[in-house]
Image 1 (cartoon, helix red, strand yellow):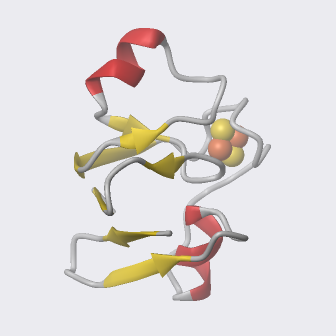
Image 2: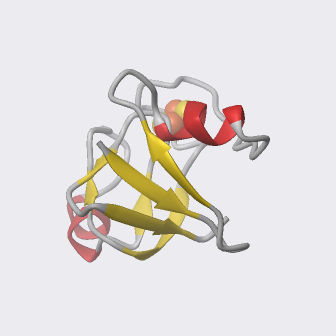
Length: 86
Ligand code: FES
């Protein structure tokens, strides 16, 4: 598992069976989602710290390697904590 931190300092643990978007929603933080499969890009969020484990098919190779963007509907984290610009 891993944690996500948002701009107000709150930190949430993402369970293995939920997406980051679902985890945030459960805590009242709503991100626009559409496909929930990493295809449409609706959910793209900026990353402030940490390295995403990209599971989408939307971001370009350049965007992936910069680690600055993330699709919370399906992607995970390679670092114990991902800090999102939310
Ligand atoms: Fe479509 Fe995340 S909701 S890429």
